[in-house]
Structures are given as C-alpha cells and as structure tokens.
Image 1 (spheres, rainbow over the protein chains, first blue to last red):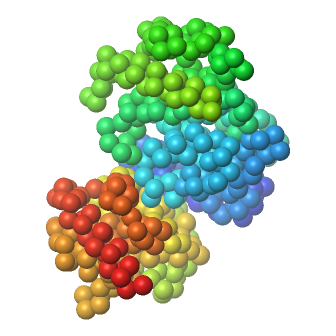
Image 2 (cartoon, each protein chain N blue to C red):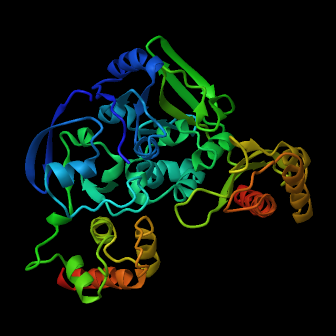
Image 3 (tube, chains in turn purple, blue):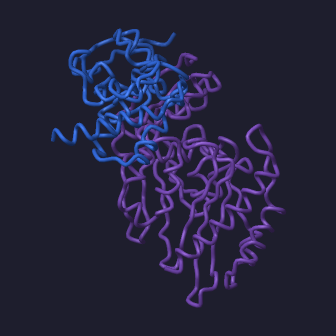
Length: 292
Length: 160
C-alpha cells in the first residue's frame, strides 16, 4: 500500500510545468492535480507513473470567471468544493453543484479539482456526464501551443481522454444556458459518496409554445464513457412533452442504446430499470425547470 | 529510490524541516517522521477517513497526499485539539456521549467535525450525518458520534 518511486516536479509557473511534462510525459510521467483518484491508484500500484508534475503551486490555474456570454470559465485546478459553493456557478450552471454534491465527500472535494475529475474520465464519474450534456469545452495546452476540444472529443474511453502525453488541461469553458433551458442531475448509488450504479445529466430547452426545442441527455455508469440518449431526444424534439411521451422516449434509449454491464452490486436488469426510472425523473425535472 | 527533497512544514504550530522521498505519504510523514501517532491509517486509499487532518485549515486525507506537497503549508492533527486535562469542546462531548467507542476512527472524525462546526456552528442532525459521511466507523456506532457533535455544538453555542 505504498506508491512506487517517482521523480517529483513542483513547477512555479505554467510554462515551467509545460516544459517539464514535455520532458517526462512520453516516459510515463503524469500530471498531479488533486490526486484524489491518482494517489489511491498509486498506493495500490495500479498506477506507477515515473514522474509527477504537481500543479498545486500554480495560482494561475485556480479561478472561476463568469464569461460575457453568460457561461463560466473555470481554471482546471479549482477545487471541487470551491466550485460547488461558488455563487456564479450556482446561478449560471446549477447542475454543477448538484452533481458535485454526489462526488465522494466534502473532504475529498476540498482537495480534488474540477479539471482532475474531468481528465480522470471515470465512467461512473459525475462531471463527465454533465460535461457531455452541457457540452463543456476543454483548453489543452502544451509547450507547442494550445487547442480547444469539446466534450465529445475529450472523453475517449475508461480513464482515457484525448489529452496527449505532453498536454495539460488548463481550463474548462461551461457554455451559457439559454433562458428557456432547464437541467437535472440524478443518480443512484449504494451509499453516499459511492460511485453511481447509474446516473444521468439532462438539459432541455423549450420553445415559447412549451414544445421541446432541443436537449441532450447523458448517461453514466452504463458504458466506458458518457452515452448520449439520441433515441430519446429524437422522439422528444419538436413535441409537447407528456408523461407517456417521456416514458416512451427514455424506453427507446434504454432498450436500443444502453448496454450496461453486471457486477456484484447490480444486475443488467436492475441497471436498465434505474436508467428508465432516472431518465424519466430527470427529463421531467429539466422540463419543469425550463418552464420557470 | 528517487532523490530526497527538503521540506518545511508547520504542524500544530511547530515548524519541522525534513528530507523525504517524494513517494512518502503525508500520513506516514506525520506518524513516522514526526512521531505524531494520533493520525490513524486505515484503508490507505482515501475511503475510511481516519487519516483526516487539516491542511491549511481544510479537512483532507493525509494518506492520499504526498509529504512533499505539504512543503510551505500548515497542518493540524488531532494532537492540536486538546490534552486529557484540557479537551476541546468536541473531545469533551465525545467523552460524555461515548462517541469514541473503540477509538480507531476518532481522530479523523474529530478533525472533520472540528472544521465542520467552525463552518456550521448550528447544524441540524441531517447536516451532521452528511458531515461525517466520509468517515467510516466499524463499531457502526454512529449514533453516539452524532449525539456528541450535537452536544458540542450546543456547548460551544452557550459559551459564545
């Protein structure tokens, strides 16, 4: 239960960090953010990075800025607990504090970071599904320059993102919510702070007649990465939502698009049942909030 | 073995300078380098919560932080709370309500709830339950712990 040896770098500026990761990234060096998932994996020796570039000493990566367009720009090292309690976040993207409440425990969120939880790409993680439904944009920097990618591109598979070995996720843009949009986050887990058996993040935008103009529904815990409920959205879009329509739409996704696995905690049937129940609950909540 | 790194950490108000391997966990640093055995180590992967300390005033798990990361920072451990003769209000309440039980999870719970009561001096029972949900007690006697936190809040309130 002790980590293997590694070289430790504590850069004092982002350019220094980019230089260091460019030197060690190809040889198994990793970025250390909050370490709340990485260090446990190192203690078990499931992860044995040869070097760690620790971003905790870079104040330039800790910030939450409201953007002119009505969204948010969040520095990758901002602690999850800080994001959870931030007034701008509550106002502009209330689904984020709602989902963070489910992410482990306050003690973990005191150290864990917003960028770290996203770059970890945990298939049962809360932030990746929220990122997929709200379409977060990710700023990836390397010594060579920077690029922006969206959530569809960023999440590749289990614990895998599109980040190259020499890149650092430095900022996350949360797009503005339309005035007529509502969001909802739901999950079921065995106990508080445990990873989700199934979870869901939904955004629904209504038009002025109360019909569904647009939306995105993302499931977690049912595949290697967030799964978009495109079947459900196909049926919902352009229609006035009724309870029957919502149930039918979610049923389409649950039967055609989700292929959950079984483990000792939940059978395939139970996960499908949860996906249906949470799907209906989440879409209804998002619609009710959008109508306000 | 990788090179030793010199660090300077303030623990319970005292400055310590040591040379450590990067892979040394903060929990091991506190226990074996500084000889402060009050911080317990249970699961050693961030789940059980008994290694919880205050890092710059905020509860954090010392078993999933490296000692080198504490360089220049301030740590408080359970030893900072009080002495057998002069216990903190929370420790006093734990004694009165028998919240310690076997005592293994106690240091983590005391540190977590010391910070919790500072942030939220008048917690509801629900909030207390949520506040300790990251700390496992395998005596499974959470009831006494919750009563102790409630009593501490009441006692601190009547004094202020």
